[in-house]
Image (cartoon, rainbow, N blue to C red; front, side, top):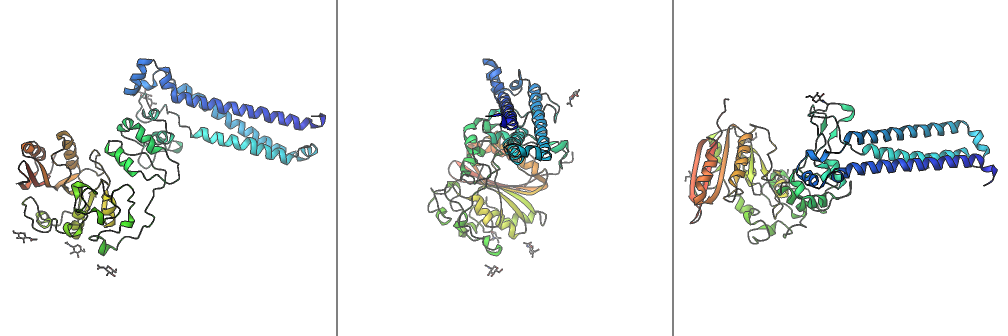
Length: 468
Ligand SMILES: *[C@@H]1O[C@H](CO)[C@@H](O)[C@H](O)[C@H]1NC(C)=O
Ligand SMILES: *[C@@H]1O[C@H](CO)[C@@H](O)[C@H](O)[C@H]1NC(C)=O
Ligand SMILES: *[C@@H]1O[C@H](CO)[C@@H](O)[C@H](O)[C@H]1NC(C)=O
Ligand SMILES: *[C@@H]1O[C@H](CO)[C@@H](O)[C@H](O)[C@H]1NC(C)=O
């Protein structure tokens, strides 16, 4: 390098120093965010580490969140001012074009160099830093621990992003009147960490894996709601438009509209009672429309089978909306639709595509598990019909939680239709107490033997007004 390179060399040296400085800053920031991430575990003593897993508060003992967030903010500010300086330098060079033109490297080249090699990386580093979510020291509720305690339990970034509270921009209050949106997952997700991290390990914006059954397993184990939101769900490659509404209600849907890869069957015809092992044993025959057509509209041999017409006659014209809580293909909702009653049917895809089936019939499936509080407001439903799911296996306390939730959403004067509940004869008293504890008005109450040891119970009960 001779003397002639003087301006160029100086500039190159400046650039070199800048790059080293920037690199240093990026490293500092990465280290401090790593520090934030691991510090909870590192700073604690052995016994503290145990407590760390069981107690929320201890995660932050010995960890100065404020100092860290101050430091990172400082780095952010520095980066920002550096960027401004560089940009104004480029503008200055633009103005003094002629001076630079005389050197070996043209001003245009310097400018391009600065823009491509300095400003752009700096800008993306800046954005990346801004996206790091630091625990907020001030926030809703005014408690000492502001960050969601679950965040540091997970390693997969997408889970951490999901459960980090999202503050509204520029401290505004949103349409719900809150300062931010809090996404939640159930505490059971911590027990299913491995499965959840597998489920959440995906490329944002790409196609989701066809792993709804993993999702359903998580939900059934209490990890609910699920945090995966940012991939595109797959659909059947040969999806046909559904049958028109004057046909769809009672016609077996087109199997091409379902992704069958996680089932033993490959079409709806296969799900008939001829192959009970391939579908869901509790609902054999649910996919046979001829059998389904008989339900709730024809007299059966059992007194526990009430007719829809008889039930609706008890409350003419005021049963308009309701919930069918059970296992089935939506036939109850279909029959009720013919009576101008809108019914939402709960459905899980246990061994068969119940949700798709109900939707393809033109009815509304609600994908919820037993452990979920129902997504309806208090005193809103005219009717709850329950069949075929919580028979005598159910824990009494769980049943209590469920029944109270039904009571909550049922409106005063609404009907609870227990349809063919069955249990062991010796357990009958317990279950009867469960149903009767709410002191509903009894419109119908019928017991009938199922087998030597088992009995059926059907009941039609009315929620009383609660003038309190
Ligand atoms: C939190 O509450 C205490 C007393 O209840 C109050 O003194 C303090 O200013 C509050 N802090 C914030 C950030 O609102
Ligand atoms: C359903 O409606 C379409 C016209 O909207 C008609 O062509 C078809 O025959 C109807 N199907 C039945 C089963 O009534
Ligand atoms: C069912 O049986 C009752 C009496 O046994 C009769 O009055 C009613 O019409 C029957 N309903 C149907 C739909 O067959
Ligand atoms: C349902 O509503 C339609 C249109 O309002 C009416 O024609 C029909 O009679 C109603 N059906 C019943 C069972 O009320």
